[in-house]
Each structure stands twice: as structure tokens, then as C-alpha cells.
Image: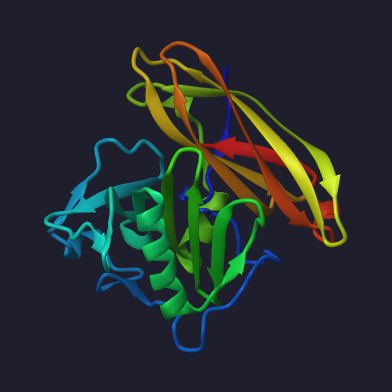
Length: 265
């Protein structure tokens, strides 16, 4: 069965998500980052010999890399991984992953001290966001999985990806490991300022091994532009269908604009 996937932001994830979202909360003046760990946004991958392609990444047309001898620390917090994302060889996103509340707390305090407190986009979970004219930063921690991530997205490059169609079935070498069978959402609660919606994604694991994935959903308007997003980590059992669910709080003045929802890894 042919299907066309319109790729948006990666991470945690990213995001994506994004530039016109009303969840936006600016950085402290002068703190919007023009680089990540000394690498400026837009830097060409061919000028970075220390970068090695991450063979575990499978999202096209963006490519993920790891850096030789990278420091798996943020202040006193320990990291599980650091990744660098490129589109058409240009640096456009970075992601860190970590485990445990202690590491999350230290990373959050570091982020607050650098960027300001941002906006807590969901009062029920640890999810924070900062947005400037060019860069969007997202921090999230799940108490259920005890895992978290933080992403930095350079929007002038990443917004181009939403316009790039990719049909995985056209490429033999890219056999589809996972198949999204169903995506839907429903309203569960309203408050004075927010609408809480529950979303559901059914995913088929077509491999012979259990896989951990980050399922990202994107809420779209009638023209296909993303208004807000959410994500959830799940472990997919080999050859089985897994239902991944979560909730998202959406401000009431943006909620009527949502016309559809899609999912990706």
C-alpha cells in the first residue's frame, strides 16, 4: 500500500512543530542560541570531520550524526546521548537524551538560568518550550518512563522539510520497519483556557526485535500546517501492534483550527 509521509520536525521528538504556535514563549533577551556546542546553525556537515553518521537513524530526508568524543554531560547532569541533525548537509537540529529525575532537574535548572523559565505547555507533565525568531527549544521528561530529552531546532532550515514528500515504498533499501495503522484524537475535557485532547496511534512493528521509538503526533489545520504537537516513547514488540496514547492541552483559541492529526517516528 502506497503512502506519502510529509516529514516535519524530529525529537524530543522535535518537535517539532512550530513557528506560529501560540504556545510560543520567548527566550530571555540575548539568549536565543545561534549554535549548539560551538557549531553554528547551517554549518555544512563536510566541514565537521568529527561527525559520524548514526546508523541507527532511519528518518529521511534528514540525517542524524554523533560527534566523536562528545561530552555526555550538561553541567552536573549525565546524558544518554547527543545527536546532531542535518538537512541537505546543513546543521539544523540537536537533541540530548537523559534518564532519571535528578538529571532532568539539573538540566531544567540550567535551561532556566540560561533562557528563562519558558512556558510549561502542559500542566500535567514536565514539558517546557522556548521560541525565538529562529530557534525553538523543547524540554520534556516522562515520569512514567523516567526518560527525557531536550531539542534545539533551527526553524529557517527545518521548516523546509515539511514541504518535502517521501514515499518509503519507492526505495527497496528502505524497507519499512514500522507501519502506522491508525491515528486519531478526541476531546476529553475543557477548562477556561484549554482543551485537553487524547490522541492514539496504532503502530505495527514489522521487525523481529523489540524496538523503542518516539512517536510524534502533529495537529494540523485545514491547509496542512502544524499548529501544535505531542509525543510519547513506546517499546514495540516484534511483529505486534502497539497502541501509543497520550494527552495534549491545547489553548481554546487555537483548538477550532485543528482539522486533522498525523503521526511519525
